[in-house]
Image (cartoon, rainbow, N blue to C red; front, side, top):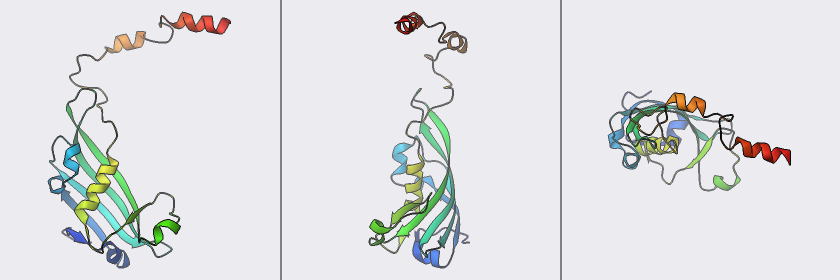
Length: 171
């Protein structure tokens, strides 16, 4: 295990040596992720193992956590969302892409060069882990949110259109 994370890595070589990378990467170092965030404070923590699978293909497995400040799509206020995701990648070459069947739970990654930016790899995984729509469970300052007492009375029995469904059943 390395004490400091390198900026450039050779994933295939790390897999041949069965290396373990564990550490933090500042979100401010990433270039594409900030467009999806309210601010870029904090660090992404990775715990990745580079190894080979039973067929000798290089793999990356591990966990990643990052506290992200995203925009709630309901109230349009910033909210904290903690990204906890697992990483399971198989590193393929261009020739292997078309005729390789991947094990369940793995995704393929094709490298264009032997050296890859670790920051870019982590950033890619964070972008893929972002939810499509982020919302508070209960927005703190939403003046248009219905009170819980009104939500309880808004059941199927109290619906004024319930009469129409009864007419439809009688036909």
